[in-house]
Length: 77
Image (cartoon, rainbow, N blue to C red; front, side, top):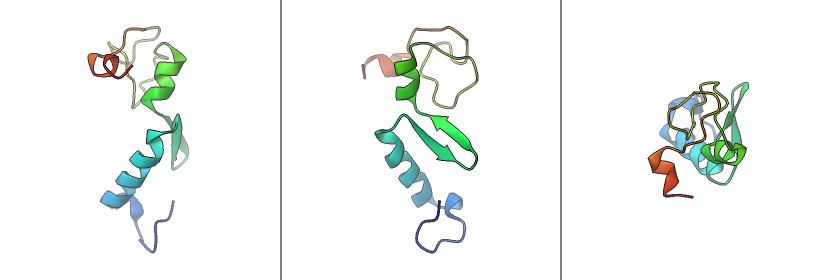
């Protein structure tokens, strides 16, 4: 992703802001060669995949098959 004429957008706070804003209403976003699934994607999936995902909303995190949402997500849904 290139933002304006920034040489290294990943080192900028604006890059993080843009990525977060795009992810708000999305189920995933791209980061270099990776697809990053948002917490909403995981909630829609219904259980933890156990792959150590960045936005895992389950408790305990990263445990395959877990369906209990972390307390911070329970109030959102």
